Image (cartoon, rainbow, N blue to C red; front, side):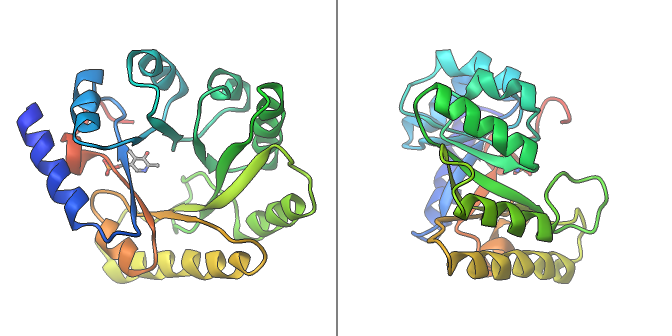
Length: 222
Ligand SMILES: *Cc1c(COP(=O)(O)O)cnc(C)c1O
């Protein structure tokens, strides 16, 4: 997609979002010149789903970008992003959270994370079962991961055209979010992508992850 069309898409989407909704521009598979183009229009929060791609792009782009890791993260790769990652949205196991905590300590910083909760019917999606997410959150509240800050939850709906099904799943995550928020103020409920972000916002999302609606279709499937 041309830079001009990317700019148009970006302006349209960023202006259409309610003020309290954060936009994470998902730049996976797209080259740095296209990311820079959106950066120059004011965007500062970008999402990537692969550590290798992120660590290749990171040095080439402005340092005030807040990078979010949104894809499944292997424990042994946390060390490559620990120094600079703003938020890891895809924490889907206790083992991973332990490693993020450890690496954050090494770099003398706190790393923000979202717990990724499995809300889709599909079997293939990564994520914590609801009870696992609650247990992990309790451990965190009890001081178990002092170098991370859990700032919210992330979820992906089933890949379907059935809007009712999607709304049901988003609403479930919103309910869990509200429940956990009683114990600690949580900032971020990340749900919704290019095809379903409006519905996600209706269901309570305050952060949306939008890739192809800004940058066009991806060059390769991920
Ligand atoms: C790729 C990706 C997105 C963005 O998807 P689009 O449909 O291109 O907007 C959002 N969230 C996650 C976890 C992704 O991997």
